[in-house]
Length: 295
Image 1 (cartoon, one colour):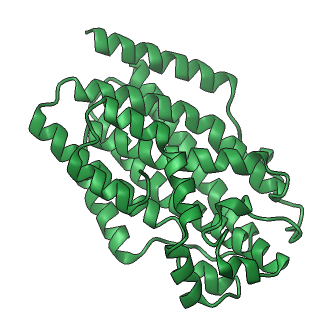
Image 2 (cartoon, rainbow, N blue to C red):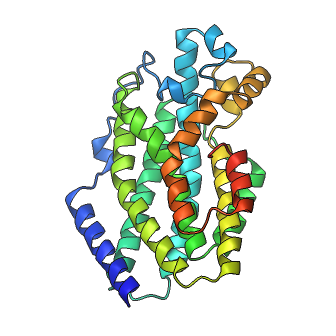
């Protein structure tokens, strides 16, 4: 009963916060001003090529175009996972009392994610990018994951996806080199996702309270595999060709880019501490986090 009360208290506070501070991207974002190509699409330090020899050879215009394509790809991955998230949350609350604060917060979160997906799609289009989608194998793994994941596996995976995005978007929204409408998009997402992450942490702890050792270890691995697929899907390989670069060379240098790997690891330090604190950082799970350069 104590856990339920704690969860209800969190949900009520989040509902109150949402009522006080939420955004409508259709009116908050400047969709009408033409794209200014003098700006980046993301902080250049977050580019997969930043710090490589290839980056050093690029013109300023090429670097800006690359970051715009990469930002659009991250948005596409965000849309993909938000659709998975919505289905998992809906399944979790399907037969629960809709008058409960936790259920009403879950519905509020789903409404937020719907708006975010539309916002990301419109943002990518304004960046003059195609609709970047994950590889077919990632799409099918996502289909499998959203069908089988429940409890802490669903909520911890939500947390993984949102935490990685949160750190990079906090950098982008403060960076005056980034095109203003993208900064607005990032600010909206950061503010609203902070509430989603708080709820995901609470639900992960609550579900784990009743989990045995076998379930905990199995879900730890499932979450880690999901994290690997999400993070390795963020930047589509086609961004390089669409930015006018040599795709094969760009892929080689991006894969070996220690700077980008260090940025990912730094962005996930708090997440890894949380997963460790709830017993979800097992040896097999760590292997996937290392492969994704999250630890």
